[in-house]
Length: 358
Image (tube, rainbow, N blue to C red; front, top):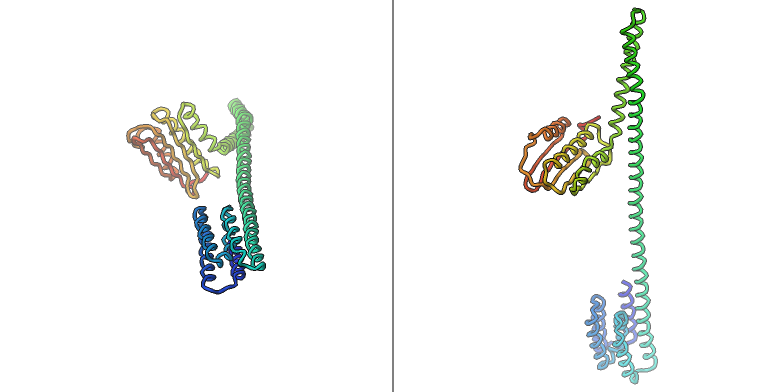
C-alpha cells in the first residue's frame, strides 16, 4: 500500500509538471499509468527491462513521455536497473536544450523525489518485516515456554502423586508387618488363654477381648488392602508389564493417555489384561513389533494391544487366558474384541466410566 501511494504521488507531480492536455500528453499519461500498474503487480526483471526500453524509446521520440519517466524510475530503482536510470538521464540531456530552466529543475526534483521515496519505503518495509518476524518469534517462544511450563507442572504433579502412592505403600507395608503381626500374636495369645482358662467369670471377658482383637485385625487388613490398591500406579504397572517385550528384543510402542487414576476395578482389569496379552505374545507370537495403547475418553477407557505376528484366526473362548479376559471385561460392563489374521493379533477393550465405581 505504501508503494502504491508513493507512485500515485509521483504520477500526480508528473501530470502537474507536464502541464499540457494535448493528445501526446494524454497518451504519455495512460502509457505510464499502465506501465506502473504492470510493474506494481509483476516483479519480473525481464518484463521491467522491456518496459524500460520502450519507455526510453518513446521518451526520445516524444518529449511528453520524458515528464512521466520519474513515475517509472521508482520501480527501476527498486529492481536495481541502474542502466535504465542512466539511459533516462541521457534522454533528459537530449531534450534539455528544448526546455526552460524551471521545468528542468522540476523534472530533476521529481526524479530525485521518486528515488528518495522508493528508498524510504523500502527501508520502512524492511523494518516492518523484521518487526513482524520478531513478534512472531516472540509469540512462538512464549508458546514454547508456556508448553514447557505446563509439562513441568504436569511432571511435578506426577512426581507428587507417585510420592504419595509410594508413601501409601510404605504405610500399608509397615502396618502389615508390624501392627498386623502384633495383633495376630495377641489374638493367638487370647485364644490360648481362653482355652486354658477355667474361671467362668474371666471367660466372658477373654471372649470379648478376642472378638475386639479380631475386629481390629479385620479393620486393619481392609485398610491395608485399600492403601495397597490406591498405591498401585496404572502407568508404572503397564510399563512394567510391557518391559519383558523389549527385553526379549521386540520393538514396543506404548501410548498412555490417562489423566486421572481410574477406579480400582478398572485399573486392575487393565493391568491384568496387559500382563496376559504380553505374556501370550512372548509365548505364542512370532511378532517383532508390539503396540500397546491405553487412552482415557470422556465416557470410557480404551485399551488396544496389537502385534505383527502371523497367526490364524482365533476365538476368544480358546484358552484360559482369553476366557479370563472376557470374564473380567464383561463383569465390568465392557466390550472385548479379539481378532487375528496374517497381519497380526489384536485385542481391543472398551470400559465405560459411569457404570464402574470403586
